Image (cartoon, rainbow, N blue to C red; front, side):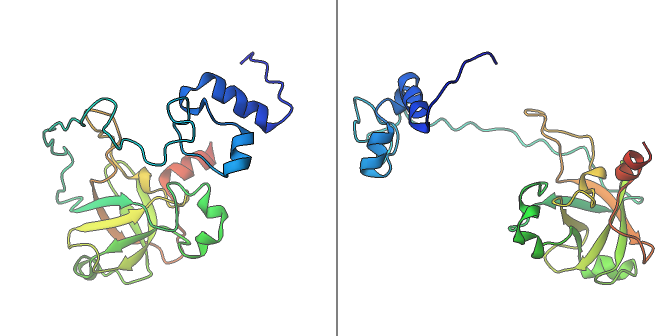
Amino acid sequence: MGYEMHYDNAAAIMDEIAEITPTFKGVSFAMLDEVGSVQWPCNDAAPTGTPIMHVEGFVRGQGQFMETPFVPTEERSNRKFPLLLTTGRILSQYNVGAQTRRTANVTWHTEDVLEIHEADAAMRGIVDGQKIAVSSRIGETILTALVSDRVPAGVVHTTFHHPTSGANVVTTEYSDWATNCPEFKVTAVEIRPADSSAAPTNTLESVLTKA
């Protein structure tokens, strides 16, 4: 970016931060060596730091709570796609897993599975551990079935930590009106047994591979 950064050590970087950032004005490596750690703000008003912030009140007064109206989703289940898919995380993985899949955490969550209520599974001849095709009006992917009582009948759930699973290949184009955040939590889908030899894959991956 054109800014010259000729530092001899990390202490010099901390000195520059303290020079231009009011909340760190009193922080230096010498101080950290002496006390071990310091909680910001650390400045002329609080030379030893601030163990607990906002004890006397918030700088801008009390927080403001605003009501926001509920806006229902436009996505609807129908005869072709009678189930609602919702996606989420699992404790051992973080988001798309770019970091956590490189750790031993992957042994706890080796693939994204589709949780299905036993009634929905029985209706479709699906058994636990079977490869199933999950399709929506947007796309299709193949996941492993996990028959579970954690989801109610009519709802299926999966995570999105493994790229080959392609959970978001089937999610819709709808988004939040205020932040434009994609609506990953409500997608009408249908599920069916897939070829027993099928591996987790998705239509988007096939397109990219051919390209």
